[in-house]
Image: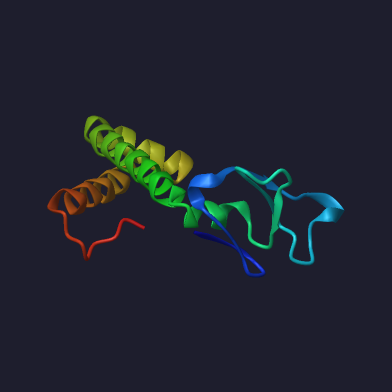
Length: 124
């Protein structure tokens, strides 16, 4: 069951569309239209579509995707920082303020922490 606000609940497996309420219709506890299988008209929820999706379990898959992207970026940074020579790294830092060597170091630390599987270490 997913809480929609104001004492309204819907089964997560019956919700098929979430539609944010926009413009002047939004407000006063009206945030999202929730289309539920078997009910001809949408329910008005006082919660945003994002919080409803989180309750439905969509948040976990979205976070996993973000985590995979962050780890892939960290891996590329670690590899690229090793290929850039010290002279080019200093030039990049002088021109843009980005320290490629430091980014590579932090990326390697991040990858080491995730490889160890420490539950106490958090990426973000």
